[in-house]
Length: 163
Image 1: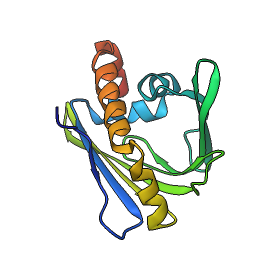
Image 2: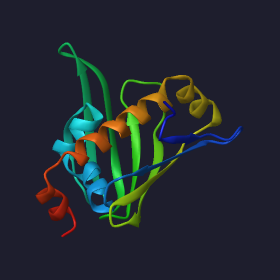
Image 3: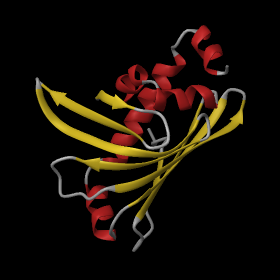
């Protein structure tokens, strides 16, 4: 099956552009990024902190068999509900420097939306190093879970997200 999440990386550029269309209202898609409980479900990580506001911060932790495998954190620079999140992203205890992420949420119709993520890296080398990992496969799997989990939420939560 072909991945639904499109990951583009032009040669000799310090960026990755990710796009995905969802069969979800834009309000519900945005909620997947602002609600810690929903975020934990589709990302498979624990939310230690999530301050959804300008100059807020976040911290995530992924464990396997009781051992912490991955930690990430960052600062939220812009938080416009149902529209945009601009944030930094840092993988703790890794050689990767901080990256800048622009997430844009677009309404296609009442029941469809598009997520556009533009990630800027310190260098082409760091961007390429990330692409050598199963990054594209992982983000596609996470987005598939996001679609699955949110589509199963009770209709009341769908309606609530629009208010």
